[in-house]
Amino acid sequence: EIVLSQSPGTLSLSPGERATLSCRASQSVSSNSLAWYQQKPGQAPRLIIYDASNVATGSPERFSGSGSGTDFTLTISRLEPEDFAVYYCQQYSRSPLTFGGGTRVEIK
Amino acid sequence: EVQLVESGGGLAQPGGPLRLSCATSGFPFTSYVINWVRQAPGTGLEWVSAISGSGGSTYYANSVKGRFTISRDISKNTVFLQMSSLRDDDTAVYYCATSSRTFWYFDFWGRGTLVTVSS
Image (tube, rainbow over all chains, first blue to last red; front, side):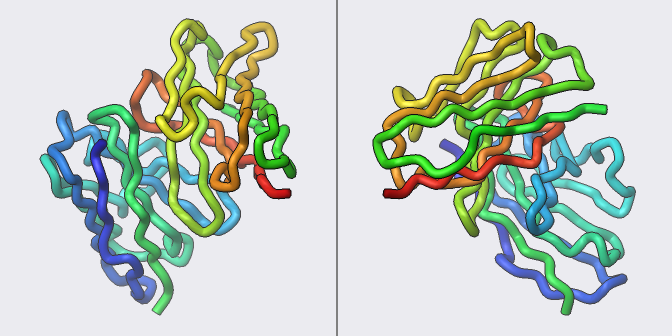
């Protein structure tokens, strides 16, 4: 199975700052089949990026995704108070579907 | 509006059964794959199972294969997850989530139902 490693584990930033989250795959993810989700405490995950770089409907334009092969990045251009949450990457290149361990973005 | 509502969670005995339901609305039920994804307390996400739009194809993670069975009732727009031989490490919040094809990303999620396996 494809193992996804996310870094850093925790990112401490202030509102207005730029956040850069990394997701590294143990094998190449074909066709950029990678998604990002945001999860807030007590809530279900919410899709924010699919196909590595497409912003999901309803997600703000300050979210962007990039990368290919084994290295992917989620960028939040300017953090808003509602962006502080845990972010997970997920690959759908190969069965079984797998998720990364998550990056917590916390208020500094 | 797409809605997914899970139910059926609760306390289960190790080795025992439990059946979860996912009632759906707001989208063409037979056009979407329905998945179950779980999250153990304080940890990450694990895909568990999926069923095709027609219900003719089912898929399972190795960790639950042979113990869990997914099914769907088209007349009720509902998907079920029958769990048996439950183990302590099945303790988790179970979410149902849609995807437009099998082995894909998850568009919409329910709020989840908590399953606790303990004696």
